[in-house]
Each structure stands twice: as structure tokens, then as C-alpha cells.
View 1 (cartoon, one colour):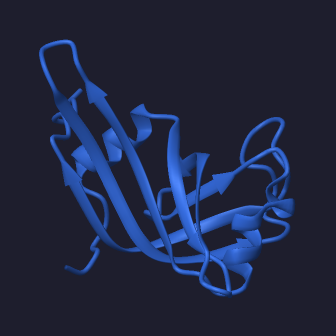
View 2 (cartoon, rainbow, N blue to C red; view 1 turned 45 degrees about the vertical axis):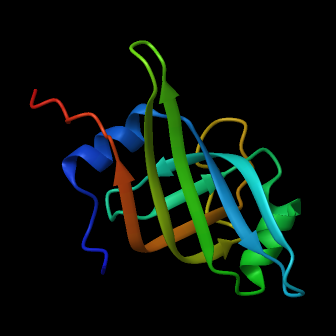
Length: 128
């Protein structure tokens, strides 16, 4: 399934959340998975930022050419068991001087270019 941009529901879901999990693979094949803060961009890329992003293993893995998987999910238990998730797979760039994506962040950013997206149980986007 080719990625042709986020749907309105996917974009609204991503904008409503603050934390996701980024998986990368090191050059020697070790998988890492870390909680991260993210920012959805108008061009349907995802920027991953942090206080010291350039010093992280995930940043080095992406610099070395790792593909990535990124998941944003919750389980809503207000009325039973209701998992909600969005998974992105794709390529990524390790940008050393992109500029801090928010106050308190370092200038390094991992930019995800989705090539596959799967979502489940997303709430409908508000039409307002």
C-alpha cells in the first residue's frame, strides 16, 4: 500500500497526541525502540525531536541508513477495551542542524518520510 498523504482522521489523531515510539535498527542489526516527541509537518513528514537528539543511538542509526517504524497508540478504557493506533514505516533523515522543533529541544531532528501507514479505530476528525 503506497502512502499518498495522511487522511483527515490520521492527521487529527496525530495532532491530538504528543508521544510516539520510534524503532530503528543499528548497523549490526540490533533493534531499538524509544519513546519520542514528534511534530507532523504540512508535507506529511514527521519530525522527531529531543533535548539531545544528536547524541542518541536512534539518531546514529538513522545516520547509518536505518529504515524506521513509528507508532502512536493508546488504549481507551472508558467504555471497555478500545485500542487506537497509527503505525508508520518509512525512510528517515538525520538532520544535524534543522533547528529546534520546539523550545528546549536540540537542533538535530529525525525526519520520517512515510511510505506505508496503517491505522485502527481512529476517531473521526472534527469537521469544524
